[in-house]
Amino acid sequence: MCRHLGWLGTEVSLSALVLEPPRGLLVQSYAPRRQKHGLLNADGWGVGFFDGGVPRRWRSAAPLWGDTSFESVSPALRSHCVVAAVRSATVGMPIEISATAPFTDGRWLLSHNGVVDRAVLPLPSSAESCCDSAILAATIFERGLDALGDTIAEIGTADPLARLNVLAANGSRLIATTWNETLSILRRPDGVVLASEPYDEDTGWADVPDRHLVEVSADRVTLTALDTKGTR
Image 1: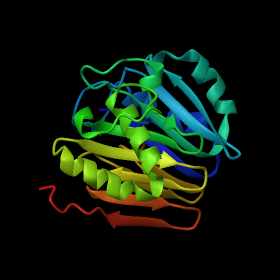
Image 2 (image 1 turned 180 degrees about the vertical axis):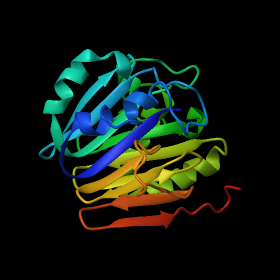
Image 3 (image 1 turned 60 degrees about the horizontal axis):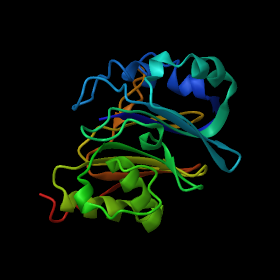
């Protein structure tokens, strides 16, 4: 369910990250290679980027492949930190802009690749939508991104069928979790990419192990195993 991508590094165009790669999010919207659940990601798309320290978003409930406006403008939009996603809606969830990642609390941009039973989540008043991903995002924002690993392990314990790959950025940090979904990392000379699946055939791509927390800053990349006690 869904594919997402994060970037932290030097300024690049949104087109270079989302549209131009031969197997990027544009292609993953209709032909993902590693997606285990669903064949298409046609229920919306979103790109979030930092304009200085301010998070900006461009979201749609339509398929990415049909958006000629984004195709036209994205080469001119540049940022050092980006979170982007294409969506395959969970059955029963609304297809609307407010249900489409990335979500924000005004400081962070966040995407969720997966599914979670809403019964194990609180219902924060700040949730943008009633969909599972929006409620999960609001829960994470309320608990704080420094507690992301603990939050995901707790929710994963409460819902053994959950898929909880989360990707978030605040302009200086890029953090992600793997929980029953795929994630790959590419360390480029000009920055770091985290993506649900590789967007090209670069041999530098590496798979992130399941149930791990990834933290990217300007000078380091750290992988930490999540506490899975009681989840199996």
